[in-house]
Image (tube, rainbow, N blue to C red; front, side, top):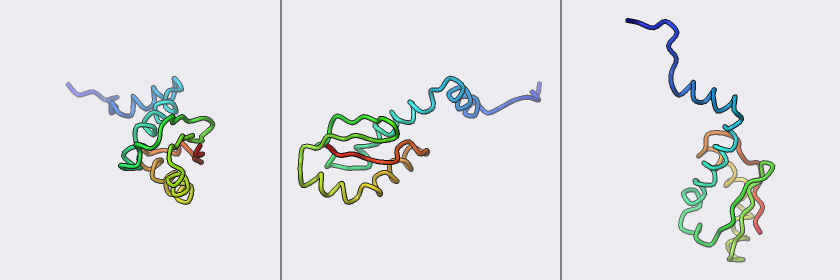
Length: 95
């Protein structure tokens, strides 16, 4: 018995998430989960991550690390978006 209207399950799930406006929050959570992977061992000096209006806000406990991350902000945005596979953030603010 062969079905003529068969579709891939992944495509149907993405379509459902878009229809229910859940795709963006899911991508934001994926990006927050990818932060330690992208940043590496220095992620222990960061906390309080949240996203608002395509901007990632990060609280950093080390002033030296803050300066270093500010200089590589564009690279971090690019790597985080690549990790998620979508443009989730356009800027990072270090506090």
